Length: 372
Image 1: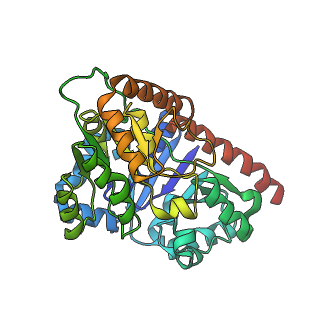
Image 2 (image 1 turned 120 degrees about the vertical axis):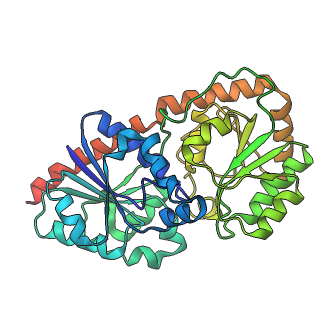
C-alpha cells in the first residue's frame, strides 16, 4: 500500500510531540513493506523555532538519527506541490496542523473521484479549546477522522461523523524508547520532567504537582522543554529545579536512564474536557522502564492499570509523599517499571497502532466501494 502522511513536521520535534509517534508509526509501516511518504511544509513553526534556537545543522541531525525515514520525506509549499505526490496513493492522512487551504484542496481532490482513502488525524485539544480553528477545516470530502482518544472522538461524533470517526491513540516507538538495565546505581538520581510550559495551560498544576512537591520531598529535579518564559525559569530555580532547555526526542531514553522517576502533569484541557487522553510522554516513560507518578487525570478508557503501572497523586501532599516513596524504595521502582513496560509491550507500541490503522483503512474501503 502507498501511504502518504501530511504532517506539521517529521524532521522537527520542537514543541511538536506528535512527531515522536509519527516517526515510530511510519517506520513500522515501512518495515512491513508499505511505501510510505511524509509530506511537510517547507516553513512550519516547529522547524523554524528549532533552527532559530539550535541552528540549521540540527535538521540534518534527523537524517543521521533516522536514516530509514530520511528518504521518505518531501516538503511542499502549496497544494500544487502536493497533488502529484498523492496521485498514486492508496491512503492519505492529513494532520490537523495542516493549513486549511491544503485540507480543502485534498478534500476537493477526493470529491472529484480520487481513489485514495482520505483521513483527517486530530491529535490536539483545539476541537474544544479553539473550535473555530477546526471549523475552518473543510472535511466534507474526507472518508473519516482519526481522533487520539475517545473523548475527542465523541466531539466529532456529535458533529455528525458518527461511525466515520475512529479512536487512534498515540503509542511508544519501542525501537527508540527502550528499557535499559535497571540496576540501581550511582548513575540514577532524582526526578526528571520533560514537557513544555505551554501558554499557561498547566502553570498552576506544575507548581502544585511538580515544583513544590519535589522541593518538599527534597528530590533533585531536572526539567527539559521549550517555551519557558523568564518568569517560569525563575520559578524553576526558586524551587531548586535545574532547567536544561530543549532536548531532541531521540535523547529522551538516555535522559530518563539517569533518573529515578518522572512525573506526568497533563494540560488542563485533557483533565477537564478531554479525559482519558494521556500525552506521548506517558507511553515513552513506561516504555523506557521509568517509574511514573501522575497528577490527577481520568484514564476513562482503561489504557493502563493505575496503581500498578504508575502511581497517582490526588493532591500536592500526595505527590510529595509519592516522590519520597519513589526516591527511597528501590523495590517499588522495580515493580512499577516492570508493570508499566508490560502494559506498553502488550498494548501500546507503534506496531499495535500500525495494525489498527491498517484495520481502519480496510474497514473504510468496502464502504467506499459500496458508495461508488
